[in-house]
Image (tube, rainbow, N blue to C red; front, side):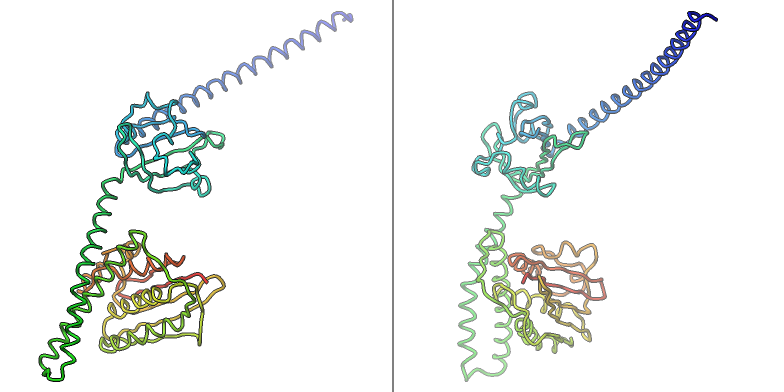
Length: 393
């Protein structure tokens, strides 16, 4: 074979190899094209599904924005709440256009999304202004939105109209405060005159016993009125603390002494395991005493005869705890998270016929929260409850 023929053969081999490589690449491109087409169809289907889901939500407003707050998603719930059709809003308006300017404080979008950006989500009440100028109180859940690459793409705002609910809550609180205030004045007069009558040495034993019963019940009603006023103050944001230094051992010892007579009469053993002094926490001594008294009186009240209530105080580097354990009727597991709300009582308490209106734990939790602490409840129905008041040091 001549040199020329060898070169031609080599070229033919190269051409054949290139043709084979081209065929392979064409097959790969075809495969990738099919994969891309499938992926595109899946993305379109997912987008259509998400759109249909969002459009099906009519009781909540769902608004999606880009990073600058420009509206990109506007569902029928938002149309109903704010009175504007989607075509008039998407890519034309910002979410902040519908917020009450005073609440934004000149910070614009950052006022609404800062907490969500820091914590991953945020839920709070905002005032939305509809196209007709009406104002709606809306509980808005804000979450950041990411694109397919995981980069920030904007924000999602899911709003629930709470206007009527919040108005009803305000009316309820006003009613409670008004009734409580109107009851306290005549009750004080009744208790004052009862004290005068009971001081009369000429009063016979039978009438004295009857008046003692009246006094106890009037005092109980006065405490209830005080509790109602306190909860109204908490809800209205008028709960003010008198700061100081509080020795928890002294406070718990006083609570144990106050409850001892009631515990003895109920056949309940009451014990306290306390350090000699301390720990000392910052706080309002009167309010913290009220919180501990509530926990101790609850434990005694819900413990049947023959049971026991144990009080302990523990201290750590960052927090101190007051723990009240009892062998009482306990709390159903499904109800433990609800306790602490106003007028909520455990089913076990209702079945046992233990008197009460469900304010003690609500007040205790409010006091703990006001001090930067918390109230923890644990227990098993029929086997007792452990209430722990945790306070920062």
